[in-house]
Image (cartoon, rainbow, N blue to C red; front, side, top):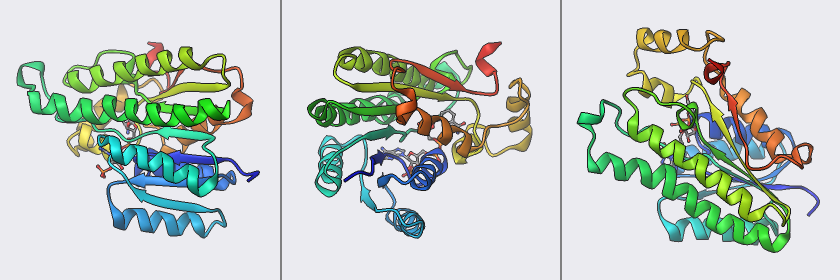
Length: 249
Ligand SMILES: NC(=O)c1ccc[n+]([C@@H]2O[C@H](COP(=O)([O-])OP(=O)(O)OC[C@H]3O[C@@H](n4cnc5c(N)ncnc54)[C@H](OP(=O)(O)O)[C@@H]3O)[C@@H](O)[C@H]2O)c1
């Protein structure tokens, strides 16, 4: 019961997976969740091999019952919920505004905005009762600046920034902190999809990043781990850009 418990959504790939591994290395009990059983079981084995207690649960963040069940399961299994990382997200279908569809709007907003809202709803209910907890939402540089060709994704990540600030304000006096991490381009499957799996397009995107390289998922995970920790006890309602100075321009 002394160990902290963390719940991570969309934990089976990319930043979510790197975060699960970083939390395991830091000795947390873990519940990882996602939509793919095979990936979930593989990552679970990897985490358990590190000697931590971990569980995998299938959960689609757009489904309220599944989110409610995920949070309940975590509390039943480990007795508490100290940290929640709301990481599941999609870039949707990219392209100019004139080509955007209602379907893409719903898919992107259901995952990135409704998904985060539902996670917050059930995580906060538990943490409020505990009088403690740290929640980290995955925003993006696309939650801070516009990005041609990514209107719906950008709008959804601006919404994540708003949810983060509002939740932090609602919880500021009860010992529960809510922050966001806003990565620049990070070397994951999402970046490959964002750049149409073209090295040329990726190079162009990275050349606009002052650091002239993409971030590694582990570099994002370390910031999440810090925000989760007591070292960040007075840090709430913020969105930390981890972006090689992209948004400093
Ligand atoms: N990579 C970047 O450059 C970058 C930059 C800024 C922000 N981010 C944000 O970082 C987060 C992680 O992205 P990533 O780069 O690690 O990409 P990724 O590897 O594609 O990870 C996204 C994860 O979310 C899961 N997911 C999508 N929809 C879901 C749903 N409805 N329910 C549950 N899980 C769902 C995906 O699972 P499936 O395989 O089942 O789809 C996948 O495991 C996202 O929120 C993304 O917007 C990424």
